[in-house]
Structures are given as structure tokens and as C-alpha cells.
Image (cartoon, rainbow, N blue to C red; front, side, top):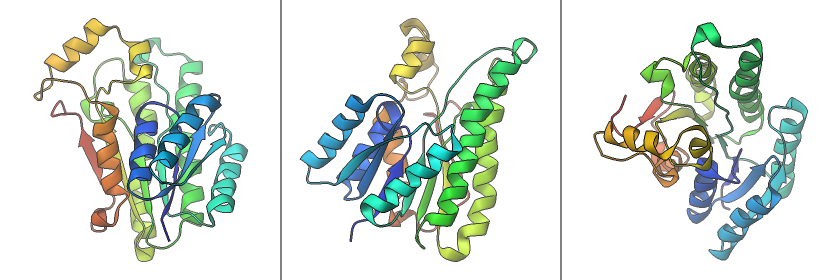
Length: 242
């Protein structure tokens, strides 16, 4: 029986690359989307075209009730759950002195509370021997000006990973996070002009910014049996920039 994976925020960007990679690895994949059903259906179609199994499920993961319903749908559709990849996040950048209360609420609702809710649900629902992977951010390690609130919200997830790894270890469930650096996605393009992306690439020892597939390969390893002796870790995936 194939493993069942739920990937939140998997209709585009890093989440899409992870969902497609896990599908290619033989897992049955629940593709989560908030609004773009057409994009989610494309991911499902690509997985199924390679003889995989996938389904698209709508849910706004910042709403705890919808997130619980998403887990219910995953278990109902495939009969169980083995892997969670918690990928949803949002970014806003400003000096701490200029950040608003709204900035705090948006960043912590999406990056901290939604991660907590997802990890709590996974802790109660994953079968023994499962895998939890949180897509964090390299800003938690780089500490660059302007990233204070965003990094703090993401760091909350990293702390939950450290503790949950110890709590779920007796059930052979591993819990890890991945800290990507700049990754070429539509979301990054909306935040930064191409000239800034070129500067980021020049500052990277490997001479480029990441592609979604680079992060997906790391997440796929952490979701696999090969990673059975890795837990409670923050995997730096910034091409040497932090």
C-alpha cells in the first residue's frame, strides 16, 4: 500500500514541486489549495499522468476548522495519512520599528498558528512511522534587517518541530523543517524585481537562487524511509548563504 501525503499550499511554487515529487515517488498525494482550483487540478493531472494517485482539496489553512476538515478529507479519501508537508506561509518585510499590528497578526496567523494547528492535527492522525516536514525559511538563520516579524513567526514552527520530534519519537514519526533561501517562485517575483534576484544569485556560493525542485528534493528525502534517523533538525537549504 502506498504512503499517503498531505501537502498544504501545493497548487503552486515550492508546494507544487513537493507534491509532484512525492507523487513521482509513489505516494498518494492530497493537493491542498485555497482559491486556485485550476492550478491544483493541474498538479493532480500531472501526478496521475505518471500513474500516481492524487486529489485536490480546498481549504484555507489559516482557519483551524477548515484545516481540520482538510485532514478529515485526506483520511477519508485515501484511508489514512502518513506524511504531512506543512508548506503554507506568507511574507511581509519591514523594520521592526515600522511593522504594524496588522503585519503581526497576518504573519503569525499564517506562519505560526496555522503551523501549530497542522502539527497538532498530524500528531493525532499520522500512522506510526510517519513523517512531518515543515517548510520554514532561511531568514530564521540569516537575521537580515527587515525580516524580524516574518522570521519570528517562522521560528515558532522550528521550535514546535524540535519539541514534537521528541514527543513523537516513540511512534517512529520523524519531524524536521527545511529552511529555504531565495527560491524562484511567483510569490518571490511579486516581492522582488529581477534585478534584486540577480543580486541574490551573485551572493550565493553556487551562483544562483534555488528552484522549487531543489527544495522538493530535500523534502522528499525527509518524507522517505531513507530519513528514518533524522529528526528534530532544521535543514539549511540556502545554497550556502546562511
